[in-house]
Amino acid sequence: MQSAFLEHCRQLLGDAHVLTGEADMAPFLRDWRGRFTGRALAVLRPGSVQEVAVLVRACVAAHVPIVPQGGNTGLVLGSVPDASGSAVVLSLARLNQVRAVDPVNRTMTVDAGCILQSVQEAAAAHGCLFPLSLAAEGSCTIGGNLSTNAGGTAVLRYGNTRELCLGLEVVTPQGEIWSGLRGLRKDNTGYDLRDLFIGAEGTLGIITGAVLKLFPQPKASITALAALASPADALRLLSVMQDRCGASLTGFELMSAFCLRLVHKHFPQLPQPFAQEHGQYVLLELSSSESEEHAVGLLERAIGAALDDGVIEDAVVASSVAQSQGLWQMREHIPLAQAADGKNIKHDISLPVSAIADFIADTEPLLQQAFPGCQLVCFGHLGDGNLHFNVAPPVGISNEDFLSNQDAVNLLVHDNVVAFGGSISAEHGIGALKRDELARYKSPVELQMMRAIKAALDPLGIMNPGKII
Ligand code: FAD
Image (cartoon, rainbow, N blue to C red):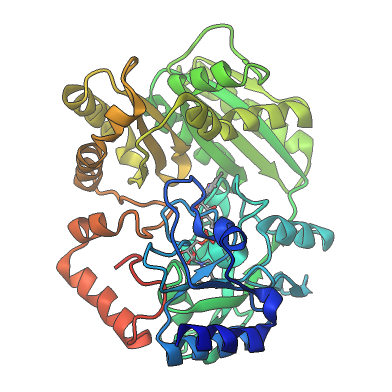
């Protein structure tokens, strides 16, 4: 049965695009953080939407589960198969064409396997901005971004991937092609199917194409680093910046002193802008559609007001592109510095912005009480209410010993997140990693509706089984 199925796939795609050798399949089976390696019947690499549809029909006929995969940069074990070896990985990597750009409608239509960075570049070549930006942009794909509703560093101004998408093309779990590639900003014609597939992590169908929103390129972007005493002051600074700069504020990233200490320990070549250490830091970005002078003037007046009011203790404004890149590198090197320092228990949480300072002030002592000496690596997209709230071992305790507390640490942090009105997954999704926790935190009514949608669209349970629900 399996060999007949694989032979059928080879006839459809050609031998070169049906991978079954261990070494060929290895990069598709191992998750990005290297925590889990699954097994698969084969890795299938279709080259067109029609081939995706025919393959899905072949999988239905042979009862073979499908794990859709883009760049395999997901962080919740959603893009890799389980250990059973019964599923195929369906890679969208060969569907990588920009189909059309409409600068007047400010939209572009792309294949799902396009790498995010190439989409940004194609938009820029037409004088437009596609604002989605994240550290994995050189290898993640638009299909993966949509399927995880990715966030990144520009959500404050432009929203999540969901807000950047107008239309979708999807191959259903029955192998039909739904062409919803509409470039409409208004379309109230019944249930919003597009939004069902966005964030579904490949459990409801395979996204093969999308119509994306484009924006005017800002004339200038200015970056600054503010030093302040506490997360509460960072929230006060956010209010000052939003009141004074409005939509010009495009980035607002919180980093604790401990995060920057880790960065400077492992990447001493990166800038160290302040002579003395402060409790917290905020990386700010302002964009202007007018001019650099306009952006600098806005930023300097807002920072001046924050200094006068005692909201911040110090600040530096980047005076060149190189300085600006240096400041962003400090932020982007935090995950790398964490990895260099050892293992962490990671949390990607979101909270109402107004609750963030109280949440940190409440949760840190609870962690210290339960796991004395543990070290909090807290940073994130504060303007979106999204924290990476990671817990590192106490000095002198091995990674292995500390990681044995993972379930207890997760329980403490996530219970408190929910108590403060937050979510246990802000931007990375649920995948297989947080599936059991989801059952704890979603209400029975919500879970029942999610199961009903899954059963209606994918009655055979063939799409990415074991993920989300
Ligand atoms: P994959 O990892 O291949 O897949 C992710 C999920 O989507 C899986 O469930 C998969 O089955 C499904 N899927 C993929 N393609 C399709 C498709 N065409 N149709 C249906 N389902 C599909 N995420 C953020 O949100 N914000 C960040 O700032 C961020 N920073 C990151 C930094 C680094 C260094 C890394 C490694 C990851 C980061 N991520 C971040 C997580 C990750 O990059 C995103 O989730 C990204 O959107 C995944 O895209 P991908 O193409 O790699 O998808």
